Length: 520
Image (cartoon, rainbow, N blue to C red; front, side):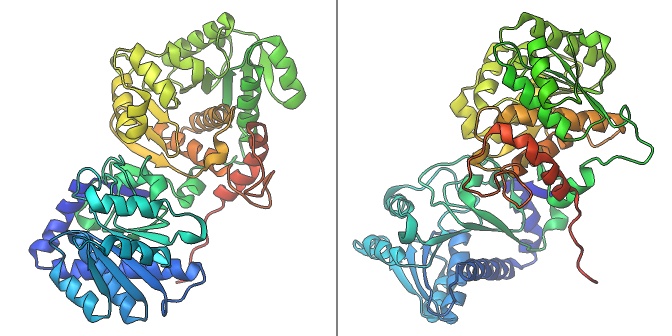
């Protein structure tokens, strides 16, 4: 797993090394890692270091020093380097090294420096953003903010590659909040440890790829407040049938979704759940929805029973049951019976209206799956108003607060999916892309989740709801990718929710395959 930490935790971990006089060595290591990140990005776009044009945005803090030392290394290897010195306290040793290597510094305070720099940046191969570090609060201001806003407007062939030093300037390292303007990066080279805000929206889409430079502080870091599943974790967690299994030991997923008005939600959720390969999927709902299911998924067992009369190992309630009193009543009964039996329930869409905060852990078996608007409505109904814009501005904090208040696992959907439990643990996943932003995609995610939870319950998994929910988000995100085994494999091909279930077997197989280990 990737582990991410707060700014405070990273600073505390660095302190023993700084106290031992290793500050200059840490800066040299960070700067060299930054330079190597620039080299890697240049080469991936067909450019050499020698003759490359590099421009640097340099602030007053250590990030500015890191950027200048990296610029010095690049200049000494044949790059043409120009730095805009935005502050009055530029790191003196780093600036001296930069100028000695042939770099040119422009003081922003000089009247024409900004326009000269922008002209140079327009023809640069790469811009290094070393303005604000992890200790900054708020965004860029004044003349440097205008420079960054002007650069960020560039597009196409006019836009240079951008490498952020530790984090894009204007991003809050711990929370992921963004204070514009921010120069969107192709690559963020971060130092010592991943910062929790870089693994959450709205910051993450501005970071590009993340590259971690090890500074030897991992032994001083505590438990990670934010984690992320990597491919190897998915391979270990995805269930596979055992020799002695039968359909009841492989998990029975129960689904209460769809209605006469919204039959598609039931079809999409069921198709996704069945494609994950549990032992059985049981559908409870109207006969007209069941009739359509029998054509698309004849393996699904359908009825109009009460949830108290069927045996499952996880429930999904909510998608498409709006206004159908019979379905809403089934959802209420499923919640009550699951609480008594201690089995997990995925609560999505209209099912969220049935949830209230409770005491004594009575919601601890629930996985709630709202998007920002649904979470705002749920919290307002429960007397804890938080606007959609507030949630979208800080989803990490919002999901954590909602999970603690509601006593349930909260999977907050968005550009980065945030999964939080009542104890404050958080996992985030960003496997997907905007192709999943389509009607019915959430129903597919809900079906994946209930299948995984049913299989986990059947095999007595102890991974916990939060890990399984993050795994479901990872699988769902991968459905938006490309590959020869996927339906609509081209990244430019249209993708709708009806196509997603057909992609699950290939994505599951890919994620289930352990990564090859290098030879000793």
